[in-house]
Image (cartoon, rainbow over all chains, first blue to last red; front, side, top):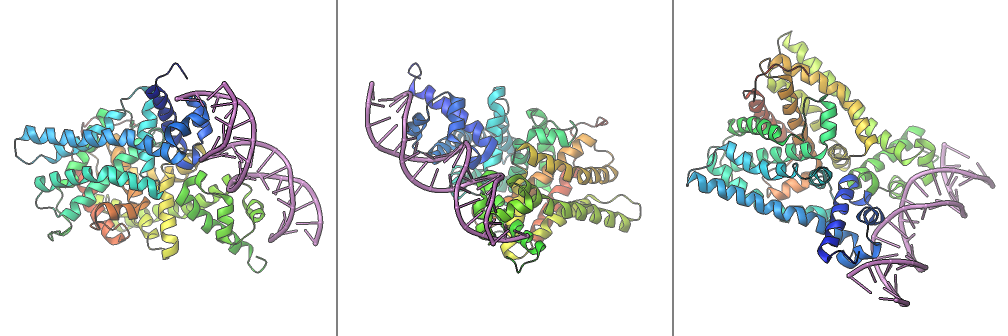
Length: 221
Length: 221
DNA sequence: GTCTATAAGGAGATAGAC
DNA sequence: GTCTATCTCCTTATAGAC
């Protein structure tokens, strides 16, 4: 490994770890599998990341950090274009969906790992993983909630939050096991076709968001 | 354990295994943790279930079997009530959501395990787990797809399948980490309130299903 | 059918040479 | 910074007494 720079070495480890965590979850991935794929020595990982937990944290932050920035950036950009007018639900949905769906276009080898990792970690009940996820995502959630409130002032904040959860949930599900969805629908749905997923989701969920709220009480939360 | 019947003993093991698999996934659960919670000897599990894989299979089938029957039964019942007329999308959604949401009402201790297990296994990419899931669920998917086609003849089968995936995905997400959702929404959304989840989801997704399809081509799949 | 004891190997992590 | 070797513990699974 002496011909690799420090950063290259870390990248190789993170790539291998990402794939391993996506495949087997935290417990299912072993450090020895990871170093074999990365082509580095076991002790190197501990030198760079301290522990398996530290490695998991680095893997998550490498993806969630940029994703968070992209989400905030695309929302700001759409709001600039709208010149002070509230965004349409379609635009808000596009801003929610585009950054994660862009990951689907990553080079073939890494594509599945990235998207499946995201789909998988939302279901990991491990306290530390959930804490990372919460801190990395809460700002994004708040920004989108605010955009939705401006766009749909008649719907209560609680209802909007429910509906936003449904969108994140459906998205995670689609990203997580694309192959299973393809098999179960006998090829009718191909989650790797990002443009198709985008248009299907926007059409479907925009109508949902516009549905009258279940009860119109003003929300406090 | 000699004072327990064979079935009671298996039930205790399955309950403990269900909770362990829900918490840590397949790899994260250890046989030793499971027998400690179940209060049985390690060898007993191997006697009854053969292997860790066999135990996982038994855990899944104990829940997915009845769930499958309930889904098919409630759909048939609604169709009987409709006397040959196509079901409304609201009724179809109710039939999709009620059986899983009924699990939320299970005794407190088991509640979280059951629902989180279901949320979790859909993201386990392990081939065997996915195979069990597919065979257990394909019949249910087909039945609901047919009901949707009758109800919404103008929407292509491919679009209906996409939309059905969105519903299953959102449901799995809600069931999987209720606590995280409660924290992230600062208490605005409480996934344990099954009646609330039901009305929110029906209102939201019924409008989505009725949205005009992205393109109206006749579907072959 | 249920137990004890143990096999056989994999796990995370580290010490210390270079 | 990178390697080898190893420590210690835990894993699934089974053999065999009772």
